[in-house]
Length: 245
Image (cartoon, rainbow, N blue to C red; front, side, top):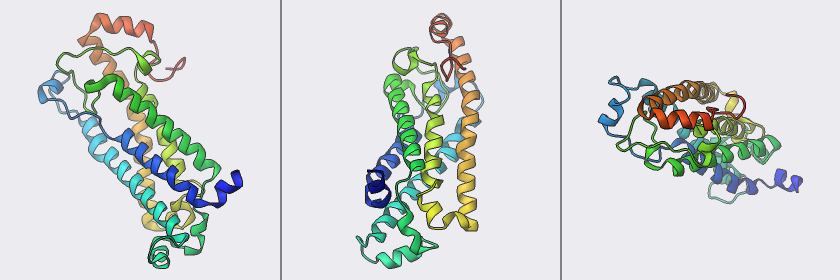
């Protein structure tokens, strides 16, 4: 079975499609931005961190992920001669066209794919649990209530916890052995190194921002719903990682 997965790159296409969809889910706000008044309840100053993450990092990370996924699918189809102008496509997309067959399922890809899907699934569950309260903007909504069920009964910020396996997953899938970027020589070019280096740096930097954001959100909820929050904090003492933090 493992030999079949490694040698028939066509089997990777449905995994790539699922990973691309997972990226869309994890990196797209499920709700429209809150009203300006709802954001001002948190602070009169514009939330620079949110805007930087949303319009800089998240859009860029999603764009590179989806572009890389599309290039990988096209390369696989061209290598199998399943689309018109396959040879010309390989010459354009691959620095080393003869290595296009190395774009395949590998152990690191499978590990990354599972992490990516798990992270996206947890974030999706958080979207459903919070409903309209889940936005990428820090705010206090009209009729704001504290959600303490589902993934929020395990840790107080499960959508941020999910960011860690998700980021590991997109990096492993897009840059690891068997990926288009690595196997066809894209990572050996100056442009490739610059684009993917900046992309990986942006993805990793988000992880450090999540710790700060979790603390800020806790403080906002403590001020807004003091009694409910204190009860919730006792029932669910960990912010992001059970028994750790």
